[in-house]
Amino acid sequence: MAFQSEEIFARLNEALDAFEPQERQDLVKQVNGIFEFQIKKDSSANAEVKVWHAEVKNQGIIKPGPAPGNPDITLYLTDEDMVALAVGDLSGARAFITDKIGLKGPMMMAMKLDVIFRSLGMGPPKGAEGDLGYDGFESSFLILQISEYLHVLTEEERKAEVAKVKGVFLFNVKNVKGETAVWMMDMKNGVGQMKKGKIDGLKPDITLEMKDKDFVDLFMGKTNGQKAFMTGKIKVKGAIMLALKLDTMMKDTQEKIGFFKSKL
Image 1 (tube, one colour):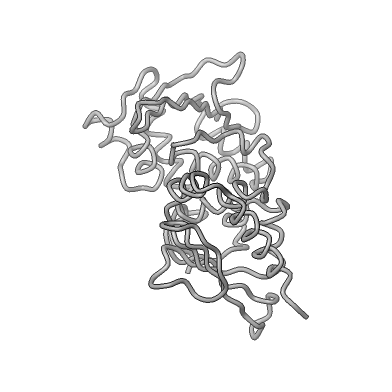
Image 2: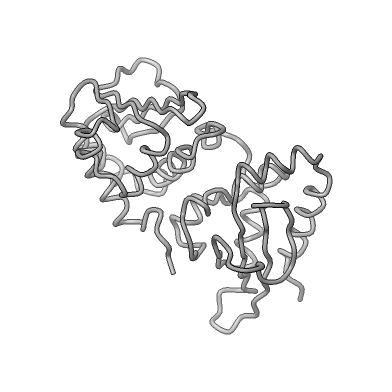
């Protein structure tokens, strides 16, 4: 029996071939990575494996077989889950959190899988989760990951997270073009939520201003929140002690789901 994902890759190729040269260049610029897909027929130990690759770093092509040279990231998943990702029944962020995808390489690159699918008319529709993103901001991918993390927790677990943090955060993030992205995270009421822009009727207990790269480094654990504040990489207004709670919450998240780390 053929792999269902073969049809998915064929459809992705057709969509990519229909791109105008500038559209293809824009996709390559946004993704800037080479993906290799190791697709298992099913979850059994000796299941047949087929390999595809997507070179979205220079030309923008999708072909069967291993990636040329060393891929930026290798994804390991079943045929069924590959189809679910492509048709929008499963988002990349949720798949990573629930271990439906194994990966070798940086999580930030893996998060761009949804970008490829959406740009080619596939993947999850842009609903509440997709609306968290801003074009030109790496932070958008980690914000989506955090939102997905909250959604896979039970209601009691989410309430426990809120009880530990007890704060409303406003993030003002600037990219290299000088554009600003705004997100608000409510970890003070109910079961918590993340929103693009401000949440109606809520005032932030703390506002954090930083560059896009520094925001990514903070959530990946490359930058200590306290050190970033002391060196001016993060500007804080409001209840400064909440900044320390944010740093602790991010460390807890990293430990629980292997945030932005290879899972293989």
